[in-house]
Image (cartoon, rainbow, N blue to C red):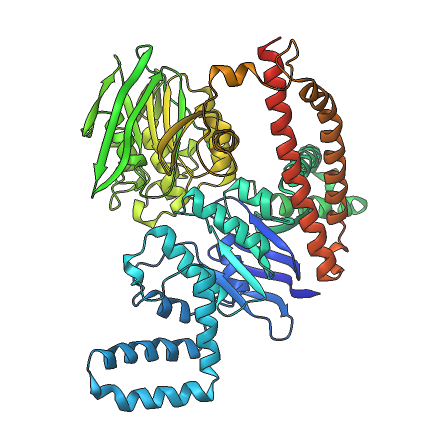
Length: 633
């Protein structure tokens, strides 16, 4: 069943429309991911769907009684009241009454008898609006989201505020839930919780995110907003990437043929008298149409040109730390922590908000003193910082002044480059470059911070949440630069795909403090599970006699006979799982898939999720056994 349908929808701010004859149908049970470059109009489209702004033209039809709720991208700083009042605001009309009832109840508890008359009036209005059932609805959502309704909203962390705002969006029991960058400011634990919650949530979802792991886990269809046009790509995110690349290649070829024909026609029209003959008027008219089409063509936004400056190599040993211990506010952040960082290491740091990630970096870089332990920095270090709070940007100055600092040119790897040309590499056109930083979006500020960072050479790069608000294309380019970077990287991030693609080892803050693992996020998950048995206790070391009396004989390659048989069977199992997953993707890509009964749709989605999880676990087991065989070959 179609929840809503858009046809020929238009919305413009300035000369170029954000939405240019957009068409879209959303079926019940879908989970759509809306992708597109920063500034392409994704948030504006969501505001139109939520009824917060009106389109300039076009049709917008919805199912009878459709309830829509939107989680906005930014956490509002001016929200007042406790958690229950903020959540209650998600209910139209009755929400304000419930919030006022809570305020009056607190006033009476504090001995203020002057509010009795207003209390009686509010109670009567709640009775007439079935307000007590709605109050129960608020309490149910608070319980489901593990929220304390009495906690003042202003005292919550950024991640908990996002959870409260999600609860406010859910309290009206929407048929269509719109989420704009829901993972911003969340730590990995909160992102995992949100992912599991949304995967099991029965309503239809439409979400914007740069978190590729979240897209792969949730999306049943990708819709892309590019140059004002909306295109639909049924199936998985990886299928979208493959088909999009094919579409862009076809578009480039088609445009090249069009431009070639236009050039020939322009040459013909300059012949003068032949072009004005009556029998050629149709050709002249066709040329005029081609000129009009060329003038209206909207070029795809270019890619940022990121380039890290080479610096003199640091010493081979960058940081050596032993026995580090740090306590804050009566809590031990880490104890007896040892680490050696070598030149070329790319180390990710992950863990819950407030666990001590930034403190550990400060101690390792010699900016904070540990309560115990020693830190020795290597030689010839040139350190650069990427600050997630963007404190190095001067908001009242223009973009160009933040970069140039009075200069006309910037030296990049020994080459002089005009500052405006340099900013164009980071997608700042001259008009935008002369505007104050305060007018930039979050993604633009992150790009500016990267531009400022890359004006200096460095061999030790420290990055604190560099991926927030970046579109996927810029994020992938940053990944490429970091993977080619020959210096040393310390990276704090909650972006799971980014960690997997960039880092060579991970420091993960766990219940008993930080531990270092080889590889990225997925490698940490596998090794963490191997480090702890199902009971949750740390694995016990076997003594020598226990190892000698192992009941299974080892083969010459280090595997037991049963493990060797299992290793031989795993490739066939992997191939079978990939075939079944591919068949499900094809089935879900059929336009009629979401016309089926909701139980059938959900069963297929659950089956796909289970198969993908089983494939991941099978791959991990194959890698484990294959590594064991290789090490002892």
